Image (tube, rainbow, N blue to C red):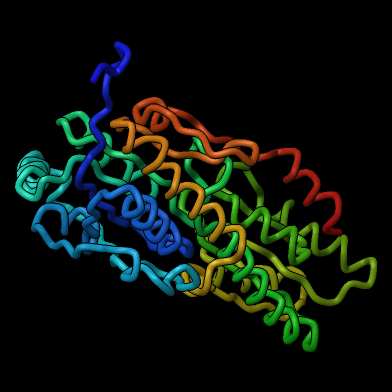
Length: 333
């Protein structure tokens, strides 16, 4: 039977899905969407256990409609995650490709951050089509307005700092809160605004402790404010314990440091993270791999789900919203 002269698209028979790098709430929702979208289209899905290490070692579990039931609300990742030094080597890459061919894997969905996408790029260059889905609490993927896990993390920070505020206010203290964000200040900036921090320190904007923390606090003290919050992104390189000591010495306000740490990564994902993860996972399979399109990164842009060439995506730059930072300065006195 003639197909009207149109080229026939041969749908992949087997794909794999993995989570890599730091875990983020919503990764499970993305895995669920990938698996169910594939299954209803008769595509076999292999879940890769512990990221690229699993891809090297053939550590797979076959996933079906029921194996991903009741995971949409869970934090962390059902497939586990790990960083793989071996995968960064040429030999490790060759092992992963051999494993893919041995198991008949024709495409891979990689859920993670920039480092994970670099691995997907390298696989794509070597003939294994990959699609990246941005899952990172830092929201630092340049091609993407929003990454899976970011909203949940922000809400976790807000909840934790609101609790710390109770004791901070009760004792007329200053609490210096360190939040995650190794190279990006999106968490610190938005959480800082949400909790009413007097000062917010982020790696994208130069700061001076004397001017931007001490003097701001002293000016606010003159308006009869007695307790303070300072939010610091871990990427600025400031020792928050030492900063608390300096604040106390110069202002006379009893000060404490609070490092939230890995509590920020955990917890049940918010509605926004569940919905966006589902949309992205569905898109990765339905709009890309089912059409034999790889070497792409799925992204959220102005509320829509779109995709970019993976090489182009990795070369993009993302900039902090300086206008929003100014808003924070204006309203935090």
